[in-house]
Amino acid sequence: MFTADPVPSSPPPAATPPRVGTADWAGAWRRARPAVLAFAAARLAGIAVLTLWAHRRHTHPRDILGLEWDALWYHRIAEWGYGTFIPSWEAPGLRYDDLAFFPLYPMAVRVLAAVLPIGSVTCALLLSWVCALLAAWGVFAVTERAYGRRTATAVVVLWALLPHAIVLSMAYTEPMMTAFAAWALYATMTRRWLAAGLLGALAGLSRPNGVAVCAAVVAAVLADAWHRRRTGRPQQAAAWAAAAIAPLGWCGYVLWVGFQTGEPLRGYFDVQSRWGSDFDFGHYALHYVKHLVLSPDNLSAYMATALCAGAVLLLAMALMDRMPLPLLVYSAVLVVIALGGANFFSCKPRFLLPAFPLLAPCAGALARARPRTTALAVVTLAGISLGYGTYVLAIVNQPL
Image 1 (cartoon, helix red, strand yellow):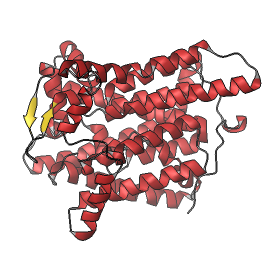
Image 2: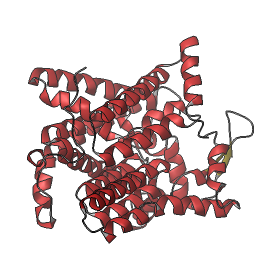
Image 3: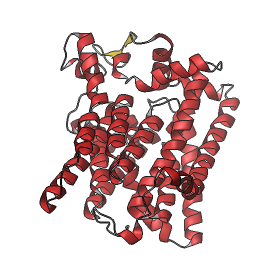
């Protein structure tokens, strides 16, 4: 297999772009602009294909993108706050409770809807699209610093063309969480510690797996502190402050749900259990794969299995290629959370969407390939992404 060249934890100066200061954001944007525009073009194409299919079925594409599956839960929270629960239609004893959904995205939609007279569904989509563009820029910035400009552009393009990338155009929290995650990782790599801590806290308020950002920030702080101790350099108070700030968002919401349910430490996890979403160290995932081997299922089940297996393989490659520590910790925690959790196997590729650093080996190979090979790969991936995105949203009836 052709992989990216190993990258040390501290990238060599020749491959590292200069540190971006306040006056150089325009230059940073100029470098990232082609990749971000390619990302936007890919996502607009996905929306266009979905729109054509929706009109064929006499459905408004806004309702599909803004009110399907979890998007409907976020819409209810934005409109009326917390307090909705629905008995499970899949298994007796389960109860779907909106306390399972983290608050930053729906609360931001509520604020935006109070300012813009365009309706909360449109505001939710607008917020997701803006966050997706900011995330694409952040993905480029992080990858450029670790691997160089060509690989960074390829990572953004690959991320835009993943089979489940349609989620980045929906009223879901993945765009917001990835935006905070990417810029938090960039802040750790450029030693902007307070910014990293604040962005990590916001990521933790946006999604349950936002805890991966907190873990990455803390790991970066500990590694920096260890290096300073070994070299006799003074510790940085800002770094330790970042390590303290980053977990506040995730821990704060988990504790708040605990107090709302009367179980301060277990409350949130009990809510997740009532959804059937326990952490079972991958037992459910292995059982589901066994089911796929013995019994036929639909395309989305096999696609989810392939993408989960690919994530494990790419994580192993990241370990061997010595991926920078914050990116490695962030990606590893996302993979462990996604594959170690029970229930909703079809959603696992969506849970892995924020793990963009795992695309670096594939992007490195794509960046070094001949132009014809690159063009063929991009066109093929675009066809799969656009077609599959429409399939999972408008055709197959499975949670996304």
